[in-house]
Length: 314
Ligand SMILES: NC(=O)c1ccc[n+]([C@@H]2O[C@H](COP(=O)([O-])OP(=O)(O)OC[C@H]3O[C@@H](n4cnc5c(N)ncnc54)[C@H](OP(=O)(O)O)[C@@H]3O)[C@@H](O)[C@H]2O)c1
Image: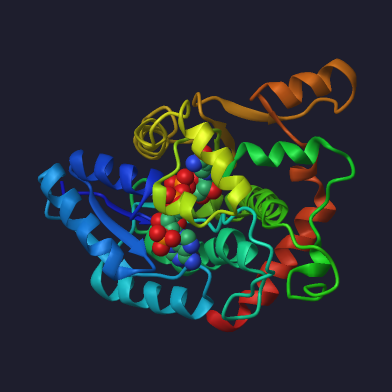
C-alpha cells in the first residue's frame, strides 16, 4: 500500500515539528506546510535523517493569507493525487503584542491565521480528501476556550476587520482565545457539512506543552517570563504529537467526527450547566466545553462570515 499523505501546517517548530517526525518515522508521506522556507529547510533535512524517510516534503504556505492558501492548494493538487490527513497546527500566538495586526486580506491576524485560513484551506482540499479511504482532519484547539465559561465572554464579531483598531486596547491573548473558539465552532459545522463525503473533522484541546525558544522570543516581556517559568514543568511537544498521530490514524477514532478531544484522548462534551458546582467542574476539569461553542446563532454568524470573507478565493 502506498504511504498515506499528511499535510501539517506550521511543521517547522514545536508540536508541528514533533508531529512531522512522528508521522515520518511511522512511514507516512508528510508535507510540511510552512511560511518560512529558509528556516524550515534545515528542519526538513533533520527530520528526513532522524526518521530515515525521504518522503518529507516542504511547501510554502502562509495560512494567514488567502492568496497563499490558494496557491499552496493548487501546487499541492498538481503534485499529489489525494490527501489522507490534514492537520491545522499553525497558529498566531504572539501574546502581549499590543499592535492590532491585519492579514494580507485585511482580517485581524489571529482570526486570519487560526480560523478563516484553516476554513478556506479545508474547503479547498475537500475534493482531494474525498479521494482517501479514511480522510481525517484535526484542528489544534486550546484550553484557553474555557474562558467562554464566563457568560460575558463573546467573540468580537464587530472588530475582525480593523474596525476598532485604534479605538480600544488590543489583546492578542483575547483574540487568540476568540479565534480558537471560532475554530472549534467551525470544526463542528464543517464536520456536519462534510459527513456525507466521508471526511472526519475533529479538534484537539491542547493543554500545556513546552514552547520553543523562537516562539518565546516573540512574546512580550511579561509573557516571556511566564512562558519560561511554565516551560520548567510543561511536557515536551512529543506527547501532544503522539495525540495528533493517534487521533488521525487509530481505529478508535476512525468514525469519530465533529468532536473536541482532550489531551487524555477523551471526548469533551458540552457543559451540562454553567453554574455552581458544575461550573467549578467545567473550569477545573477537562471534560466539558462552553455551551457558547454550540450556540446556533454564533455558529450561523461565523459560518456566514467565513463564507463571505473567503468567497473570492475558490
Ligand atoms: N504549546 C502549548 O502549550 C499550546 C497550548 C494550547 C494550544 N496550542 C496550539 O498548538 C499548536 C502548535 O503550537 P506550538 O506550541 O507548537 O507553537 P509554535 O512552536 O510556535 O508553533 C506554531 C507554528 O505555527 C507557524 N505559523 C504561525 N503563523 C503562521 C502562518 N501565518 N503561516 C504558516 N505557519 C505559521 C509557526 O511558524 P514560524 O516558525 O514561521 O513562526 C510555527 O511553526 C498551535 O495551534 C497552538 O495554538 C499550544
